[in-house]
Amino acid sequence: MTKIMFVCHGNICRSPMAEFIFKDLAEKKDVLQNFSVSSSATSSEEIWGEIGNPVYPPAKAELLKHGITCEGKRAVQLKKSDYDKYDLFVGMDNNNIRNMMRIFGSDPDGKVHKLLEFAGDGGDVADPWYSRRFDTAYSDILRGCTALLNTLTPNV
Image: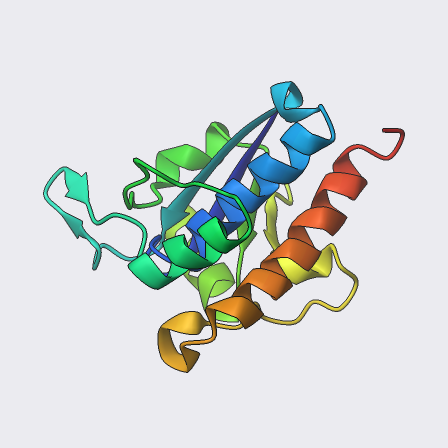
């Protein structure tokens, strides 16, 4: 089983969108059982004590437009100890990658990647927190998750 952690700044927009888009794509391809998929934040801004904030309503609404639910998801913070628990850490932008490296200290096993690397361009996933363009973020994430799933399941 391949264990994937999608990562963004607060774990309320892009990384939970990626988590649930990837799960939806894997389920439609009948390979979801081959994956454990989660998402987390590099910051603690959306986490209060033990309880994280839910997915940001516009991100949740964008997922619902595409028939994807993220009900029950709450923000969690990435921890150094996660490095040994997952096979891939997939960040949304350069800042996420930099912050993951700060948290992990290094990436000796080459587990840290940017989502759009898998789509062949290595760009950043548009941040809807600032742009308010959740549709653009969805499109970027769908493209990246589709490419990632195809990379991990080349014969399916």
